[in-house]
Length: 255
Length: 277
Image (tube, rainbow over all chains, first blue to last red):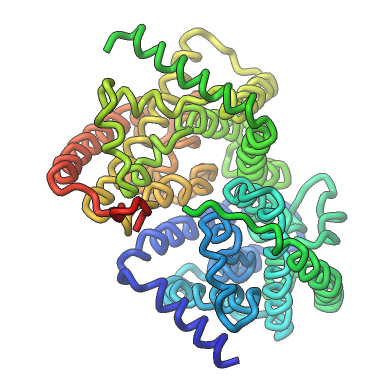
């Protein structure tokens, strides 16, 4: 485990190699997006429509979603690195490739968690937002979400291998699908036309939307975690099998 | 550079775009679908909220649809004219590719204006935007006069100018720091894309003002849409046009200064054997 820990640590340090100042544009944009988003939901929720969530729950949901965004929708460097040829270097190390990708991804979360999420969490009371989880089951749910996120990412990496490096296309489609279907942008229960009834059973719903709903106390903990467990059990073996089969087909032209 | 020559250049790039579509149809169609799915996902998220809550901040769901149509048209124009990193200009500067353009017998600004033209592979979003515009106008029963169409074109031009000017302004950093700032235009363009789809109606005035001045995302769809609906917010109907002109002027000055530095110092991105550092 130490080897993965140091891989993650290296990855975290690497992200700040050029100096923290280069992370500043990303931090500012995240902050500038979050604040209007909070007010947007405030405006929307003040219409008084009955949606099964209170305004304070919605505020906490939106805020927590922004603070934990990288964990709620996991994105490893696999597809980009495949295109650039960097992925091949992972095969020269005495560690599992997927393990390294996971450790590197977790490491890369750290600077943003420290420089964006932590300060924004501290100022949350200024906006009247509570960041206390409604249930301790939020934490296992978040872990299941992250685990499933890695499995889903693995499928997209395999798709990138299959489609010969269309990493940019895959990235666009993936972000679009996940943004809409995972409930991280709009809680699934808020979707109109009864979409919420069938959307909650698809695998992306077990990503960000599930821990967030538990966090604000707007979901049935037992059924939500059950669905997350089911999708983890179903998708992980398939992801590993798909990755094993896809590895032989890797082609890279370099960046 | 005559207008005829300019149009001919656009024609050449359109032909190249068509050739790519015909030669690699699978990839081209996949690229078009990715663009459309990505944009529709962003705009449908806001539209679904508007339907669920019967409008947002005093805008009806049909008005929000109109705003999303405008946003899709902007995305369509952006993709149609920015197919070749000519708007993501920090990539070109950062990768040391700007000098490739210096040896062409066409002025640099003309190359940059024409080289990204891809009407065949990049026109999907624009067509979807036109469709959404048609539907929203019908639902709103808005009277479309020649003056209104002219206003729409002017706002689209202003919005595009703001996007390009801001991208070029931040990209000047790439002249001085090519490796670190290679992707800075992506941060400036894509990083705030979601924010540009937010209807700002009903939000506190301070938020609205900051989003049409410091971070002009409100000028990407919300302000022009409100103005075209006959309710220009805050600073008057001409504000986006004035802002676009000022931003373009500032960007032009900064870009020229950065380029002067670049042609004096050169780029260190390539190793002697050809690879990028």
